[in-house]
Amino acid sequence: MKRLLSLALLPLLAASCCPNCKPPPPAAPQTSAVIPAEGKKLIGAKLQVKAEKVDEFIAAVKTVIAASRAEPGCTSYTLLQDPYDKTAFFFFEEWKSQQAIDEHFATPHFKAFGAQLKDLIAGAPAITIYNTTGEKKVE
Image 1 (cartoon, rainbow, N blue to C red):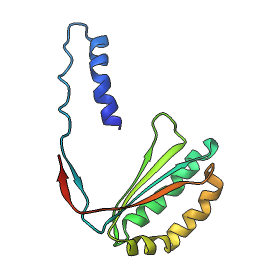
Image 2: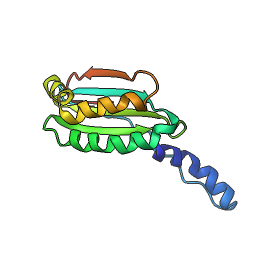
Image 3: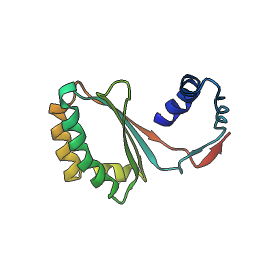
């Protein structure tokens, strides 16, 4: 997201800093994507952190991210923060199977983080688990 924002703002910055400079040509649009292999699971979890608890949340989440990435069933585990609303966060996770997710939810680090979350977030998180249908290139 930051890269997209910076690329979009680059022509404006160039024009304001150097009136005789030409902005770079626009980036070519992405024309393909890869869908993860069949059987994998993706988790998207959006949550709103209390404004006064953002720093505490970030400190707490570092532990669960490191421990989750070390789990054998974890393919990727990423936390994103909304650049316009610093209290809005989104977890994007990829797991090898539903069994891997079930094992993740049973780990001590996940349970401890879940207990911490109660005091850190405003409202319930919105969590969706997606099934993948097979790896292929999408044009």
